[in-house]
Length: 205
Image (cartoon, rainbow, N blue to C red):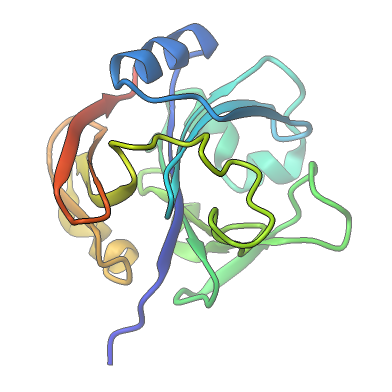
């Protein structure tokens, strides 16, 4: 039986906040929140659906600590690797290493798929928290992308050598890969299963 993983969020590294806001606006997505990651050297913009969120991430010029460099995030943000990241929720389907993310409490670590230490492959890791966006206590109720873009129908990762990604994406039912320049194609839908939005995000690194 194939091991399956539930997507929590998907990110793309870009050059900076101005570019990220342009991309969110062009995709007609509402920015639900933004946060910095001290010690990782990154900041983000996030757009939340009911089942996942999608994130644009960039290096903000702050310090990148050695543990974040070791896990390849620094070089990815500098355009020296795949700009794509996929986070799963819940049970791990991967052989993992532990990332002591500097912005998390000292007793928390993030499992990262060992294959992701190859910066040419997407960064695949566990979400620090396993709650769904619609779980009790949801602070974004009625503030996400409703009513048109409710769920992630599927996501297509474009890269130079898609065959190398199969072991990383096979646990995710709604992620596929094709040959192309580093980018992500998102198809978003509503609760009836209808695809209501289809767009591509390409990194400018």
